Length: 338
Image 1: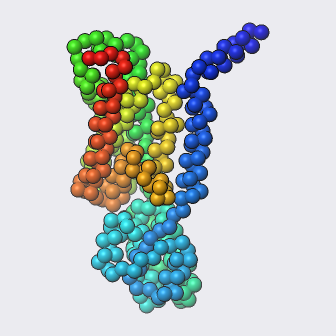
Image 2 (image 1 turned 135 degrees about the vertical axis):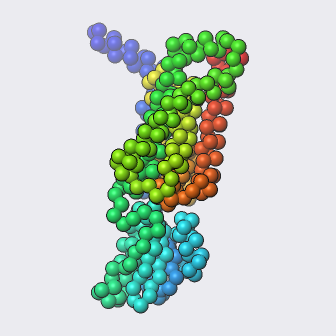
Image 3 (image 1 turned 135 degrees about the horizontal axis):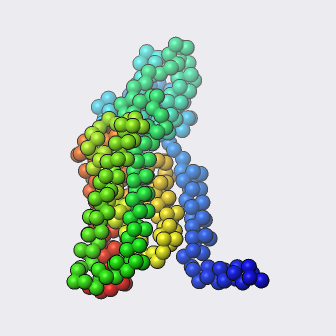
């Protein structure tokens, strides 16, 4: 009977905890739906530029789910450098010469496989079946960690900073520290800024440690500047920090803070640039911080780009930081007007 009474009490509590019920019932359906659209309906169709090839060779490429665009040498090279095409193909003397963008491993593998099949179907001699491939970004024997290392670094920093900052700020509220601050002659934006600067000091060390360990201990490939990697990861940590503080303002316990992870953190992995998405999902992709983090890290670590190439990504990440701070400042109104 005691066990029964305890079970009834727990069910009664959960009935009034709508957030927990929504997490258990709605969040899994949301995640499954998202995974369905990403893995089932988002087909990857690599785009390649062809300089010189027979119509039969091009048809064989298209039969392998490759979109072919005829270009001249100059525009094709620029398109490859900008990431608009995965490869540039030039067939000379019965042999295919291919320059590929190795920063997109899935599309690169599909393209090279299609080149091999097209060469076989086009009746090239046996010695010419193996195309001559040149990687302008990345390299042929890169590991999975090298291919996706930029995204891994961005997600790890974002996830742990979000979690620690959110729970720490929540403890400030539940312990009464925030309430005491609100009773003092201090503005809400000064409170938010103070917490960001305090936690931000630790994120500087965290960003350096994760970046240094990944690149110099785990030997993750780095073509560009390590200082730019540090700048990107630091901004990533600041975005996660302000996001975590904002979410913790809407939570009443550590458990409720954890509930944000499957709703606002895990879905960002699918929109971080790791997957080829359908056009309508690409619109959502541009609304999450991790997309810009992964893009900036990939440009520096894989393509060796400089500050000019990642300036737009850095500006957007910084914009997310400011936006989260503004929202958090307004959310503090529900505790005390200052």
